[in-house]
Length: 306
Length: 306
Image 1 (cartoon, rainbow over the protein chains, first blue to last red):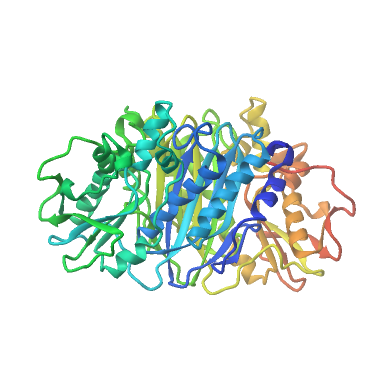
Image 2 (spheres, rainbow over the protein chains, first blue to last red):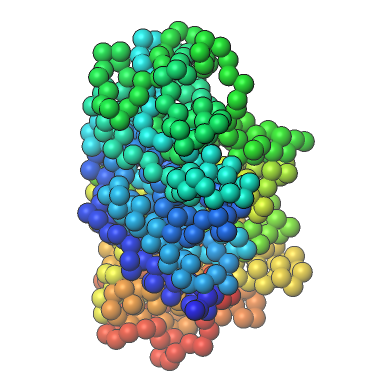
């Protein structure tokens, strides 16, 4: 089994890009100075995230395939959270030269698999040597003529609704940290988030006034909507679904756990959400986030303070 | 002087993004799940690069301002090399929590300064904690209705022309490695490349058939054009300008030194290049790159094999 250093930069790039999905959004793919990507809307939605080994993933806890899936998922969720359709990714990989080529191939298999779930292509990237594995993903998307769904549109009278898993990733991380391997569902949720990529279209169909991807923790992210919209968000915990698998502390994980990349939206009170969405509160005049009418002493995720 | 860890993720992001240029290309800038960027052409040119501390820069050799300039320059050069106009950057920064806030502020001042040279904005980004500083830059550009200038359009009979500094960065790196500080011009060239951002428009005006940014070394990059176009590129060293400041070994640096981000183009034999371009050879039938009619035993840059 050869290492990346033995194969060399250009050999590695050829090996990896040969198997990446190239959909109709890619007018010119990997191999030139830059890619050319179709942006029929005349605007492009763009987001970037860094994942650093030891901080965002551990190679003894997650395999390369899962790391690839997770890196893509968190970026595509950001595009979907704008109400946009993901079109392409750019993938930057910093990797130690002694890493087996197969590890990188598995990583790219995960990237490709998650892209295909969202109908997205990989248009380009960069591979460099570094002591530590770092993934830098940029995702682009198209708005198909619609206005973006920002965090700033929530208005008093709206309802607050959520979609997708919440709290599972944080619960799984807690298990891994304490050396446990069950429930497997939670470990798996930490290794590979499953953002419901249809959430953007569903939110638009409901007439959503704001939409965001829950990456830092539900309450913290609702706080972002409250601040950007100049409103208060009130959550009723009696309406918050807490799956039994989350066990003791389940509500805390749902309210504050990040990295599942579920979605939170504000929708008009007249909207009739599909069954996959759950209404958990409302938007009122004021500021901040109230939980059952009071403040919540929980917290969320700060990358420098965890 | 406080550290990034003390300020925290959201405090740092606010501090840094407040001073970034926000031009007309940015419809929605930093602060939401993703940015919304104007792409009036209906296509977007996109490229991404990683810069890793110790590999692409050293904090004892380059200050944060210069590192910021360099990171932006190498990405904007890739956009210009497609014949496109840079519109926005996305900036991912991985940084140790104990890093002084001022260091990051200087880095972003460099990013902003280099962006302004090319009329480009910063539309978004990500900041995470990591043991080592890594910069992940993505640059987007607009083609303004023109076809992209790829590496694949060179045809036998074309001339080969170059523009901008070549070899200076490699010569400066050699000085730094041997502990020397003069000539200052070369040290400065290594710390901060100066891509001529007008090269894309100039190449288009000449009717260029191929254009690329010289990042790995002139001969190696001409080899990329030869391969992509299915042609041979022949270089006459008598026509290659070797500035006196490069001293002994100057020609070798010009032919093989990377990271100056000058440009190489193939142009029709009827073209009349402006004075800032120098014709150094021609395109013929065949494959590969010939130097004075023979093969060159030099080499270029492989990120895993340097």
